[in-house]
Image 1 (cartoon, one colour):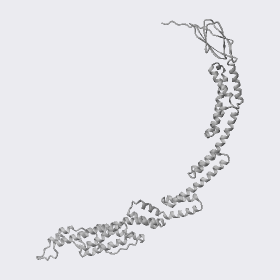
Image 2: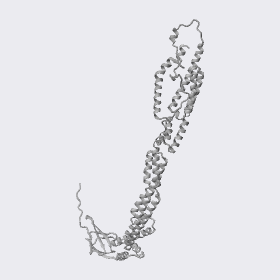
Image 3: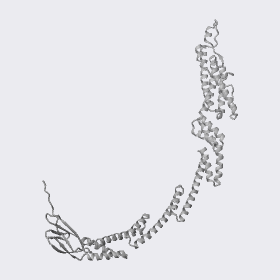
Length: 511
């Protein structure tokens, strides 16, 4: 072998004691060993790792597999070759064998890498048989390697490598089945199995949220199961509040517990239902005791609970109807009193209160219309009787006469209306009888009687006027205009009316 070929040889991990990569053809892993053996195994692995790191490189530097001492090129050059050496292996064959050795080592390196990955995934927990079969196949390669049959060694290593790769490729399938088994164990309240399965799943995928949740649930499963059984007993006994507290405690430990969540909702609904029934009973008690306001408030409280809301609202409507009917009855008494006393505006106001309660009540609609008309008639009569002097105006007289006839047409008039109409009749009759009025002036003032006409200048002038209010206007050149207002009739007729301009207008000089 040439120096160049020697340098191409790469070191390979192997067991220093046996000289074999896989000294044991079968590995039995007892997953049920006590924890102390696990610690012992970890210690052994650490020792092996130290050997691999610090001892193996020096050995591999000096030896080729299987533990053959390397030839020092320097010493080989200084060795005196025989005169007629016998060459048993040609340089080509030696180079070919080196290539075969390297190929075997390359396959072996991949095999060891895959073995490390599987060890990290604790393959003995889920694929021990296949794992041991692959290692056993690879162990045959050690035997071939010792005899320097590198081709067969490569084939054995390849089969072992492929077996390990196949195991690694099966991880997603194993992961899925592991999650199924974990959920089954969780459903069957087998906390130990569930914890083991979920922890294995997290070895495959440490970020798997479902596995993380499942492991957390499995750890409190025994406690949750005991609490659930206690809560169920209370539920069956009708102790709803106590059962609800325990169900909530369960959900604080395991928020994904479907049965506890379902039961908690059922208990909460039953508690609310019981509370609703109690509040409704209290509301009806208030109604029967003549306290509808408290009854409505109580029914509204029941409606706010969110259960049987229609029933609570129906009770509110029923109570409001009864209250409204009582209010309407009270108001009708006030209306009757106002109408009998001919206080029509008061009746209108009370009808408005009824319509505010129920705008569709026909008696209130019709009653208000009649009361409003009577109230208007009353106001017109009061105004006419209070201002009879205006009757002197023909238009006012005619309007007032229409009001009078309207009042006389009312069926069943009350004493107030009859009295108003009798008074107005007298005023209307008297308003058409002229009275003589004596006007006095200075024969220098021009006098005009508004609504009657210009009278001119005079010292005394008699004029017949209907009862009413009049205005006499006097004008004279150079004098300030005068206006004299007077009333004829109604006991206000003056003896005489003086109309004359006496105040001279002084004109100041202007520059």
